[in-house]
Amino acid sequence: MDEIAPSLDAAVAIASKREPRSIAVIGNAAEIFAEVVRRNIPIDVVTDQTSAHDPLGGYVPVGLSIDQSRALAAAEPGEQVRQAQASIARHCEAIVQLQRRGAIAFDYGNNLRGQALEAGYQDAFTYPGFVPEYIRPLFGEGRGPFRWVALSGDPEDILKTDTAVMDLFPTNQSLHRWITLAERRVPFQGLPARVCWLGYGERAAFGERINAMVRAGELRAPIVIGRDHLDAGSVASPFRETEKMRDGSDAIADWPVLNALVNTAAGATWVSVHHGGGVGIGYSLHAGMAAVADGSQLAGEKLARVLTSDPGTGVMRHADAGYPEALATARATDIDLPSVPSSSEAAK
Image 1 (cartoon, rainbow, N blue to C red):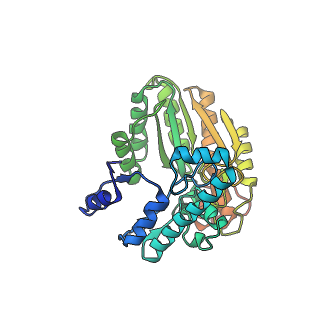
Image 2 (cartoon, rainbow, N blue to C red):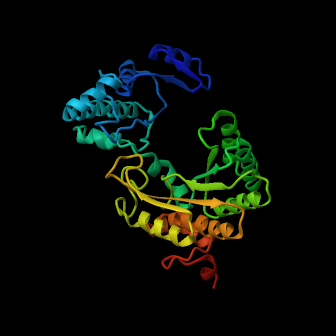
Image 3 (cartoon, rainbow, N blue to C red):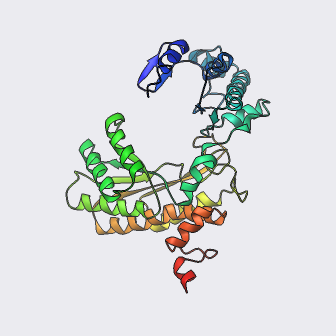
């Protein structure tokens, strides 16, 4: 954040100057959102990333401190859940009211709407999740959050790969803008790492470049390449990544299992199948993967396979659901899908 305001009044005063700044107010979102509605403060865009998937241990009810919430959860778990869900309903209702006044509203996917509905607020799903509203066309291209970590612990290794990814994709303006801002604004935590959004074909190309850099001694140690659990084809999550799929396949869990099996066969260094990411245990299934670029020929072969098949699963999953972006990507890149004629087949 650029600035932490001591109160909502102070934050509104700072924002009224109309300078591009991020301003934080420390408080309970259910109370602050409701107060914004009560005062009729003009809002253009509203979203939320509160951890609402676990009302017992992850959401602090209105009127309680964090310590009081934890004590109530230990002594009376049922009462903690009841109070948390009541606050979540109030929180969600404020977002819906802001939307009805003209704000663009979308949910990040931490199950705020689901918990509000369970608490009895029937209009909870009035506003959409961010994936169906904005991200799904990118998933159709196999595009998603691509991560890499410097095992050397040296930030210079990441800065060198920053330059490499921008050199590799010189016309990708959003990528260049992000990397430039990240270098300036995002501090490293633990092993130095970076993330950016890359699509089908791009991931394999960058993985090959990283492996070549390790082999040539440009980097001090191997790089681990992975991605977020929020990705094109590695998840079944009806309240976030696979919300409102056009073929109704929101909750079908075969896709993350298939993704894990394909990545295992392709030679990933590490593969996981887990659930709960973002929306809570029992609400989603994810497959994770990581592959090590150690500069060897074998690593290069594995990276080429994994970083092709992994986003390819996303293209396949969305092509199967009938999304035009995925169908176009499959045809343009000759992904072998039985139901989709490739560009070369279509030309015959």
